[in-house]
Image (tube, rainbow, N blue to C red; front, side):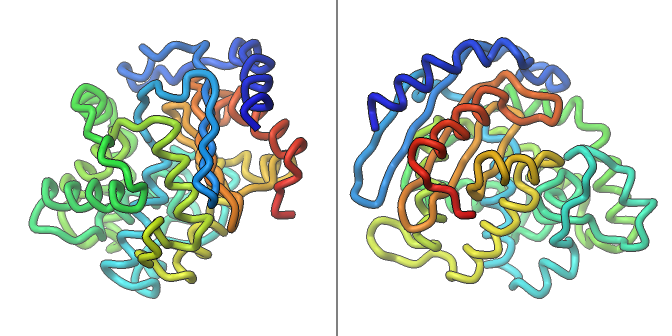
Length: 304
C-alpha cells in the first residue's frame, strides 16, 4: 500500500498543474498549488501516507459533514430535515438561484452553502462562540485528534468576503427557515470552515464514518442511521455538481472542500484523506479526484 500511494502521488503531481487554488477567499490563494498528499487509516490500525500529508489546510466544506451530525444530535433528524432537503441541486455549491426560483423554501441539501448555513444555525449553544466550541470539540472527539484549531486569518478572510453567504442566510431567515440570529449562524459557519486540519485528520473522520459512527474505543457517538444518512448525502451531494461523475469515477462516499481536502469512506474498512489545493472548475481538488480514481481502480474498493 505504501509503495502504491507514493507511486500515485508522484504520478499526479503533474495533474495539479491543471487546476487553480481558490482565490475568492484571499487567504486560500496563498496555498501551494503543487501540494499533494494522502493519508489512509484502516480498521487494523494500519496507517499509510505519502506526499504532503502533514501540510495544514482549512477544512472548509468538509466541515458540513461534521456540523450535520452535530445538528441532528442536537435537534433530531425530523427537525433538521424540515429545514433543509436531501436532494442534489445541479448548481454550484455557492449558488443562490434556487433559493428563490424553486417552489420549496428550504435549501436543497446540507452540502451546499445555503443548506450548511441553515444547519449551522441549528447547533445549540449560548452564543456563536459557545456553538463553535461545541462544533470543534465534537470534531476533535470523532476524529480522535486534538490538533484541529481555528485559523483566525482564514476566518477573518472568509467573513470579510462572505457577502453571498450572508445573502443566503438572510434569505433563509426571511422565509422562516432560520429562526435565530443570522449573524450568529454565519459566524459559526465561517469559523467551522476555517479550522486547520491535515490529511490525517480527515482520514480519521472517514474512518469514523466507515465504522458507522463509532470511535476506536468502541463508543458509539452517532447512530448507525445518522452515519448512513451522512454517507448517502456525501455520495449524492458531497462533490457539489460533480457528484454524479465522481460516483462513477471513484464510487466512494466523499466530501470535498475548497481548501483542497477530500475525505472518502470505504465502509467497514478505512478512511482516506487527500489534500491538494489546485481545484477544478467545480471546486474539487483536481489531482485529489484523479488520485482517488486510480486508488480505487487498484484496490477495487468502490461501493457500486
